[in-house]
Amino acid sequence: KAACGYVYRADDNHLVIDLPQVTVPQASLKREILTGAFPTPVVQIKTDELPGRGTRVTIALRDKRSYLSAHLGRYLFVDVQREAHPNLVPQSKPPLAAVRAAAP
Image (cartoon, rainbow, N blue to C red; front, side):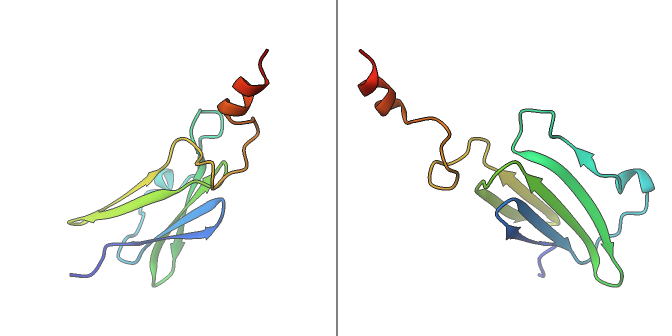
């Protein structure tokens, strides 16, 4: 059975989901979803039709995050890591052990 979609990382801050057999008929479902004001790693979700090739969903991330994707029947799930992984994103604060060592 063919996959219902394909997930890949376009660059550090973008995940792309290609859905070859999906069309988005309603204009209201094609609008960009802006989530930057919420405490989430996702800043924006955008849908584009690819004539003759289905639909592409682009997820803009606040910073580089790991993600997991899974197919279950005709469903495709994408889970983006909530907390930035220290090996993926430069830390803006020193590690807790360094803070404790520096405390009097």
